[in-house]
Length: 277
Image (cartoon, rainbow, N blue to C red; front, side, top):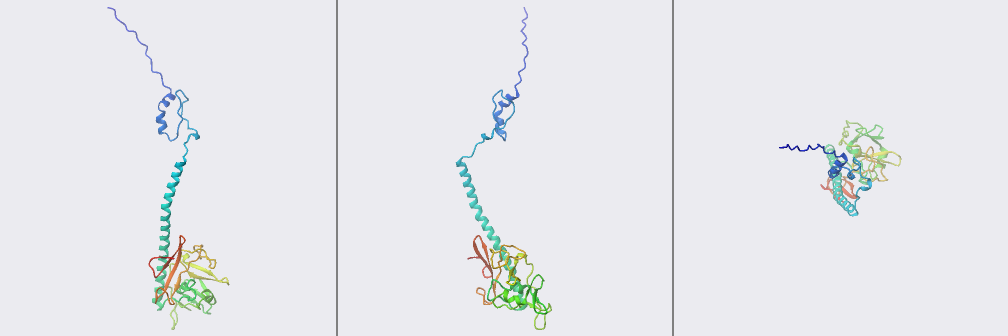
């Protein structure tokens, strides 16, 4: 019996697949996972990845642009009122805190002297409250008042010109800290004032005098000098009336107007809530 010898087939290895073809075989996966779009190459094309030309980016349609604009407008409409409300709340809070500071000083003044600080009957806006609460020393020649902290001074002849309306001098003043048999020495009733709580007003003779102001400034008033060492946008003095006050009979009226968002908010010692005028 003949042995059947099967012919031996020549072994052949599978032909290597070019790398370019392997890339193209998986081109869909690559295109989906890459951060940049790639041009799909035909089988047998040049190997490698090539960025798509800039012109292949898809532009927004008019409808999409209008939708984005509408969303932005809606967000702005929600944010702007909240921002304004927060700004108003902050300004009111600062003014009320400063109101309390001045009230405390006035009450301390009364506890030491037996009366409230005199006001300026002719003009409650430009008053001598700062000098009264700070206390002053009158020089021996009776020519100049110096505040007890030495930060400012005003000549005696400038007082009636500064506080027009009947102010000739200061009650909380003396020629020495010790005082005399007839009159006690001056006392300091207020402290910890920030630079933007003091304002300087220029007189026609180029002399300046100081008023007590709120740090929440008012739009620049051409008739008043800028705030000294503070916010330069404008003065906002504390209004003060102790002679026949309208709202607090028997004591005093103290208030300031703060402009917030075009509305005038009055912060006063007769209302716990700001009054919108």
